Image (cartoon, rainbow, N blue to C red; front, side):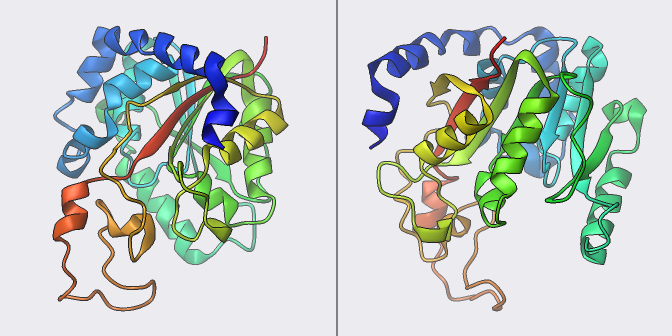
Length: 279
C-alpha cells in the first residue's frame, strides 16, 4: 500500500529533499544548542533530530510558525528563540478557553504552559491561541509560513471530525506556498489498527487528510525513521520512550514490567512529511 501511494516520483522527491538537512542556518543551530532548553528535551535530540528535521521542513529566518499541541514544549524551546533571533513569530496552541466544555484540567494545563514560557527575554514571545473542535481559526487567513504538527495526528483522529478541522484550519492560515510540517508515529508497512488504538498511523491516512484540505505532498524524509521499532508493543507506541508505559491506561505502573527491549528500541519509527499549500 505504501509503495503504491508514494510511487517513484515521490521517492525522487525524498532523495532530493535530503540536501536541505545539510544547510541549517547558524541561528537554528544556536537555538538547538541553547543551554536553557530542558535537559529532558535535549536528551531526546538523538531521536528527534531537531536541526535536520526543521531544515527538511524548510524553516527560514523571519517566518511566522504555528505549532499545534506543543506538549511539554520540546519545539517551543527551539522555535520561539529562533523566531526572536531572526525577526519571525512563534505561535502555539492551548486549550480553548472560549469553549465552556473545556475541562478545568485542560485550562490549568494551558495556564501552566503559558507561565513556563512567559519570560520573553529568555524564550522570545510565545503567543498561545485557542485550539479544539469548536475553536476559531488559528489566525488571520494567509498569515503564517509554516504549521507544524509533531506526533499529534493520532490524537486528532480520536475526535470525530477533528483531523479534518485541523487540516482545514492549517490550510486557511497558511500563505500560498506555505508548509504543513508533519511528524507522526508510522504504522507502515503493516496496516493501521482500527481506531489507531496503538498510536501508529498509516502514511496514506495522513496524505489523504492533507490532500482533502487542498495540500500537496512535496517531500518525505527518513530522518526520524527507526528500523528497530517492531510496532507490536503491549501498550502501543507509549510502551517506548519517552512515555515508557508499563500498564494499561488508568492502571498503576507495573514495577515488574521488563522494559529492557523497549528501551533498547528507543523512540518510535516516524514519518516526516512536508506538504505545501499551492501558490
